Image (cartoon, rainbow, N blue to C red; front, side):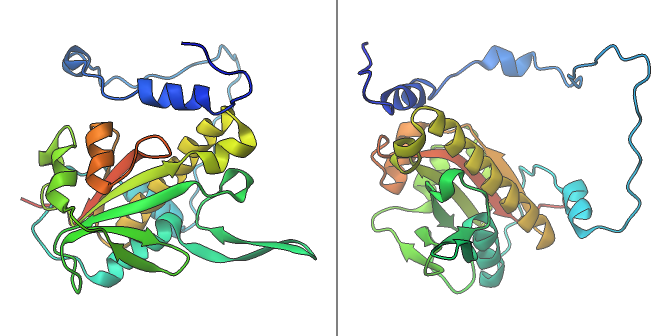
Length: 249
């Protein structure tokens, strides 16, 4: 396949489409739980000092766990709203120069371009009907998608039992052109980095609300895109998270 030299976005899209579903069961069966890390041969390494100051953030980081069993309990609408705002909410007007300002979000974004879109498949979230919604951070609202439901989203995850009873399945999608038009193929990296920033916010927001979350990269790309009505090229799913109350039994 030849790539047009004057089309900086083709390479990024080609990589995205060719890094889709990959089944390697042997790797899962042989996975080691030994911590892998690099050690530099320094004869006098410097031990870091433990931080003994009280810190809300440190407490949330320490408490974060990936949870794959959820209780069949309703989620207050205020908790769902808080988690979505933590993920990608508008945080205020940023004035860069006396004549230029832009609206910031809860995560850093290369060039302030904000290529991500969030879709929330809901189950037993108080005050709203189960379904799939687009999160509109500018107007701080959920917009119902017609003809799609939670079951369609759940079924395209490789291990749907991991998210059973979760109240929120958040699909993070990317409109690649928003970033690639400025940064070319390297912009694809920036899109994925931004999705990671948002996902961590969701995880920490869940802990703060007494909930649990799991980050999911294992899903059928094409089926996920169809489930939330994306074309897979201009806009495509890149990440997924489940949020709910952790099961205790």
